[in-house]
Length: 201
Image 1 (cartoon, rainbow, N blue to C red):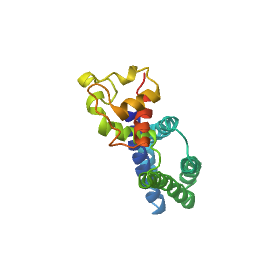
Image 2 (cartoon, helix red, strand yellow):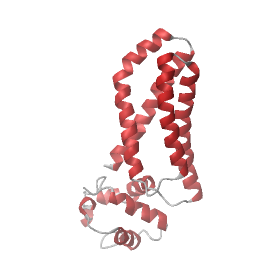
Image 3 (cartoon, helix red, strand yellow):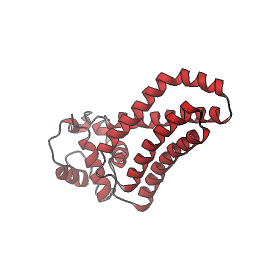
Image 4 (cartoon, rainbow, N blue to C red):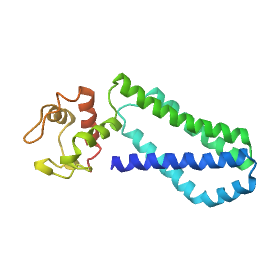
């Protein structure tokens, strides 16, 4: 489930940015007729994309172990840009529309910077890192949804095991499952265990 929502968020963010880029360019170049046509054409898709963007983002926030300052700033920027964009495009105000677009791109940039800082400084991994680590190390036996059961792998979506027990098994291995204690650090192992919690039905 998390994987699907993650990719939904990624696609909706990029489509959202693309729509606002086109609208901003049309407004700044005084193509008012083109802007009106484009706005009418993308009205319904834009509403759907915006809703998916916000709902998937909110869901992903609930999966994080903690919300850090950078994430709070990003959320504030995104929510500040929305009314500015609405007013800017409705009134044909180029400055407001441009500021709104810059804020949205800035929020996206903050998210990318945050990812790079985490990998460069080996900060404790988030659920997103857990998803990436799970995909790399676990998906071949457990599957995307935790239900594959290859080589006797248990169904993670139905597991009643607590987080500490999961960490121990990931670290030391069990039955046919290899140990990851020598290839992954504590934060990475914890991130995988945290991610498997999102697979529970």
